Image (cartoon, rainbow, N blue to C red; front, side, top):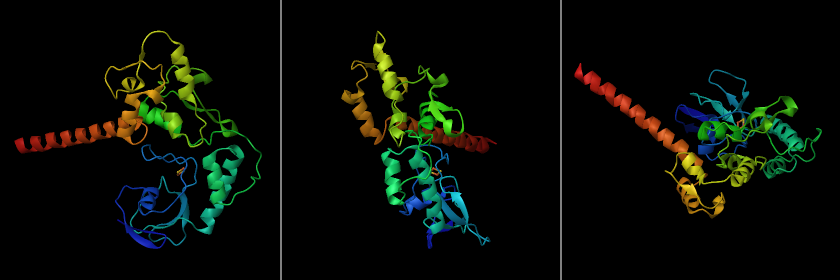
Length: 265
Ligand code: FES
């Protein structure tokens, strides 16, 4: 389908989001809570753009990571209105996480200096990437959101039970501010335990029956390095790719069965 991005017409595959289409076109849209391998979440709102649907005159502000492309959609990614809203969001984030490099970088880019809001000095921007990777990809559900409003935070169940964590480190890897340290807490706990430790990639189902002989010092581990090289990112995303491939194969199998059934009739 055809859409217009910053005045240029583009062909975009149906089902894509505006953010994906913009990135494919080489446009830079800030998107703190988006990750290619996770479902869109829409919490940071930094990816807002102005979108005008066919037949409408007035553009509306939408979160591009959630907004699907539509035939004839006109999108502007850097209007004064968009920049004004983004500056306000960055100002709020800067008050919350003044030391996070990712937020400081955005503040410099959008010329946000001193926030007008009371400082919270938290590390977490509540983007939810850690919670989503743990639930969607690892399937461990070891962390989640607790509380509401300015007290909202990411926590393990009841604030202390970390037994569901398999120390895969995916949450630490995807965190844009360095706030999530679950992997280190859990590996410290596992090291205290006696007996053999199963390799975290065996627990995840990525490799069969490997036992860790390095006391969870994964940075020294050949398996870890090999899997990281194979994934080109954190090895946990190999799981997501395997699942996707299996789903596609499953769909193909079902389609083949249907065709065979029709042929028999
Ligand atoms: Fe779209 Fe965060 S990237 S809301």
